[in-house]
Image (cartoon, rainbow, N blue to C red):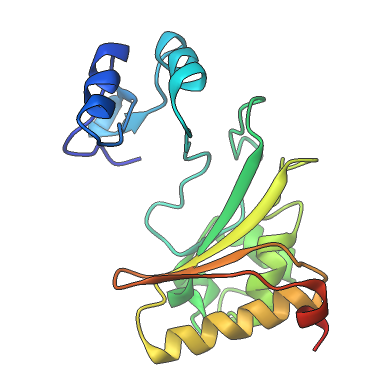
Length: 193
């Protein structure tokens, strides 16, 4: 991932952030100015001492949509919750312009690069074991739809929610944006209506 402005590389730096009432972004500097996972000493300390540890398991090179490659995602064995994230700015756009690993997306959806993503396509990519659910196994799985910053995107997000529910997904979904975030918890009953 891109290197943040402020980050911690040692347990002492993490604890100093926590003592100041802040969260700690932890990792190691990688080639090309990137940021990668913390070393095993730091990760072990985080897993023991942090209230919650959020790990980016699979990036999309700033694109809103993707299907993972064979070596992705990197989900640690200690992980108990996986969140599939997709940008609502992908809805209605061409696969070959908004998706990373276009060939994998096209194979999963059975389409070509000119195909424009529908709410059902996005639900399929989120719920497929070759999409966002890859490697989830028995862990809890939730969905976050980001870039929900205007009325049209919110309507698109609600259309994706309906498509998720029509496929039997009844877990929590977060519609989020820069201005506000709203968590939607739909019961199985609401999903049927």
